[in-house]
Image (tube, chains in turn purple, yellow):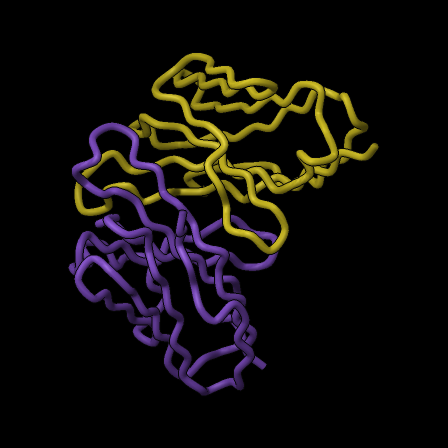
Length: 117
Length: 114
């Protein structure tokens, strides 16, 4: 069956440019998460969506980062005026959501590898 | 201090060895304890999870939680080259506005050589 997909798989950009990363969650999953994974590090939480609202944006590193979600579907993470420290793998995950009851497994996409030159 | 601490390794063992991977955490509110496996250039996938304290076994894998010492472990018996991956412990928030948010350890890179 279809899992979480992300595009592009790789993105190389120049410092100062804006980038948009896309996530297509599993159909029917109401919760969607963005994480960042720097080289050799664990995953850092960025933002959580329940439906199209974002109750928790606490992980966004700066106001250059924003995200939106259309209904219970596609989400885009936008990074404006990219910096070299933004280079990382950006991972998206989806889950059944707040009404799952008990443990709510997150399913991850393959990630977008962002390199800022 | 990080909320979840995990030794990044790397860990290299011969095929057939028993592997022990560990994490410590600081927030006693965590109720579920997860282990994710991440192959190179792939997203993490849930390997197994436990609820509260105790052990859980699934084939060659055993997850163990000691809430009194805030210590979680993953044991791999009869390790195989296909087990070579990064193993991440992850603890989800139980509720509130951060429902489901996972706090990850740094990940331990494991290599099992034939």
